[in-house]
Image 1 (spheres, rainbow, N blue to C red):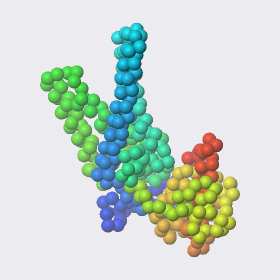
Image 2: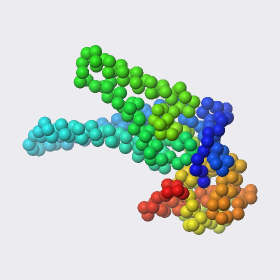
Image 3: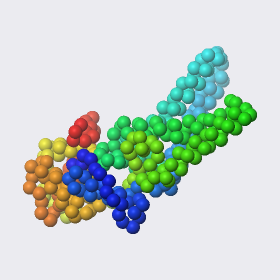
Image 4: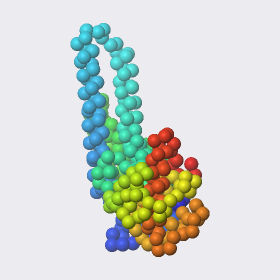
Length: 309
């Protein structure tokens, strides 16, 4: 449905944050870049969640160590303790990155913090958000934030060098925190390298046609007869999850010209005659049946990210 996009001019009252993606088919999709305040709030929530998870993990380790000592078992050698400490450091690094990767690679492309403030990660070219892009932007976070924080909290070196490390860490983090404010798309360095940006994810409901699930979703659409638009498996198989997400965005926008263009594109793909003055009902029916098909496929272990997969 949408393979790539180019960024058009900003428009609307908030010209600094409003963007328009123009697809190769000529479909214009309006989006809003996430403001810096929302990104900072999301990061604070995510760091709080990570700290809570880390604290729970440490308390569990301490409880197990206490139970081990109370059981009267032989003491652990220093070599084993050092090995376990190294594993702990590696595990902390993997777990920290796994948190962001797990959520941003999901269907919502958003962590707990991003969901709370209503923003999500997206590809800047309008294409599907790839695993490579998500991994790249999150690995850069270690260089931007967590690595200097280790310098700032290190207490192994005393005196001038310790103060130098602390101030270097503060300046380092400060530069990367201010960087999104210096470009119009509020991009951090990880976004620049990965080709991503963070955009607003409006929570406006699409009505019962989107709120439902499974095969009953078509019947749930208000005023839409069950047999009005029915698609077989071959007609639904031309699209995947990414196209489903883009179709949902089109329905949320509810722009008549956009829906007409998308309806014609779908009909061309599946060999139908495009509806006249009934594009929204057609798209809603296709959305619900495609979503139900993908949900059934995932329950049986089949997953298709997009039509090129």
